[in-house]
Length: 247
Image (spheres, one colour):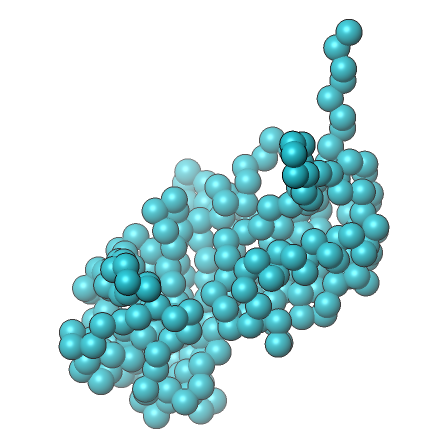
């Protein structure tokens, strides 16, 4: 006798990462969200095997100290709960700095978040005495190089700007400048804003070629007294370059 496969439902949730919790690492965020799902009382599915765990998958890791209004996770449920009801329960059970803001069901066979999302947009505020035109020139000079070498631990790595940096704009902002970055990601990697910002800083001071960049998770800046980085959007593209929203 053939045993029927259980009916499963994939709930896709958009959430924020803000305030003090923007300093959490990706694994800490995942654990916090999983605890929130349990508190919400949703009928989540678990993996099979020796060590079963919640069937939940997240979009790409956000750098520590970077905020976001567009993080995502896919949660597999064993039974159907109306999306609005699931969102309400998750909101009540989740810390406000990781609050869910949107939820809806997708086909279980739909592309995963890792395959779907190939575009990430960032908004960056730098508190600096440099004019927007100077920062824009420095960013353009770094982009022209096509790549930035950096150290992660003892390993030398390369940020491929030709593949990951699409367009940008720089404008004056309160006490400094605002940078908007439109970036691309693939299996080959994604743009690391902290590496790009450190390279811009070194370009402004003329030290890009003399001082190696070391990845610490946060930018090493001398030209800015404060930095705020926020991921504003994540989405995919169709074959004609049209936008595909995760929901």
